[in-house]
Length: 210
Image (tube, rainbow, N blue to C red; front, side):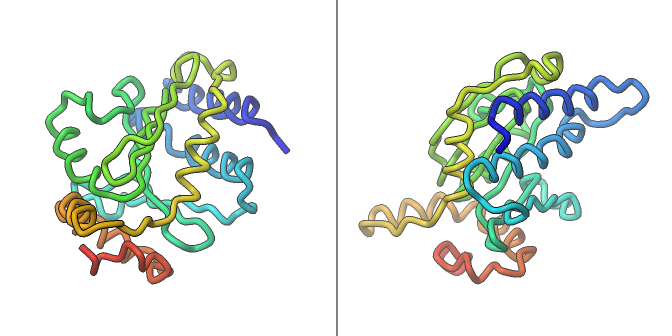
């Protein structure tokens, strides 16, 4: 099986090839899409998921909802989480964003139960608005190419993301806190679930509970 170092090297080479292509113009974050999709699928296999059981569904067709994440991610046809992609250099910790649109978007997206932010230079994992992991890649996505590298903790971040399962609240206070955090993002989440034909398998965090 291909190791983490080779997977990241190929991600870096693919991303750099698109980002520095002078013949094509477009939003930098859009140039990360194909390399990122391949990266997630290969990391999923490395984490133990069978080939083709992890899918990324781009949500550009629902662009009128400004708070929609870039991807919904399913594992074995069940919705598992979301990924938001930013332009390289913008950052992958949404708490540090200075752009007003990005800040407003974060206030909505942080209500989602399982979310990754990335700008290609690193990844953060958020669950119910709490930071669970932050991993920086080594070398810079725009320049490193095949020399891009990542610590082993990146695989752990994706293992946790893809293996996420709802955790039942242990008290009325905890339940109230979860409900309050998710209320703002209810419409975003409901729209995403509507795209998933297996959304009933996600019953433990169904929109009805919000």
